[in-house]
Image (cartoon, rainbow, N blue to C red; front, side, top):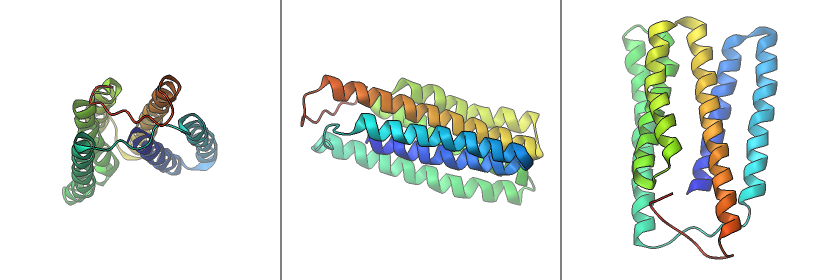
Amino acid sequence: MRRIGGLIQAAFAAFWLVRASLAIGGRAEDVLVAISGVAVIGVFTYAIRVTAGTAPRPAGREARRIERSVTIATILELAAAFVLPVIVIAAGRSDWVLPSIVITIGPLLLYLDHLVHIPRYRLVGWMMTAGPVVLVATMSGSALEVTTGIAAGVLLLGTAAAGFRDLAGIRHSSSPGQARLSTKA
């Protein structure tokens, strides 16, 4: 679950970084796309290298319960990520669309921390919940778009990279073929 979750976080980080790059425009857009591309490819390469051979997917009642809970929480987050932008557009605040999407990621990360005890998810979850509110209160237009995209991308990419580092440590400390599942990280 952590490996797939990390890959999904890295993919969404790429989306947010590209979105921010497109909002900047000009030569800065090209530079940010290049830097973001190198960073994202680096994290994906690292993930593939260090998580190869990790334990097989955990099985059992507890594993199914956690998987079901994560799936439901993710579906709720995706639904909110579609509904909130519609609400802010209807309210005449189209520049709030990106922050309204980012703000839906925070509660998901907070829930995941609660479920599987990954403390960095708590910090990043609060940052992605409160951060967009602060940005909306202090910025508007393309500055809001760019800052939101870069911040979300960097937070998600950093969280994914840290998760892959954790998995690399688990891989090295556990015996081959032994699946471990714990609600404590």
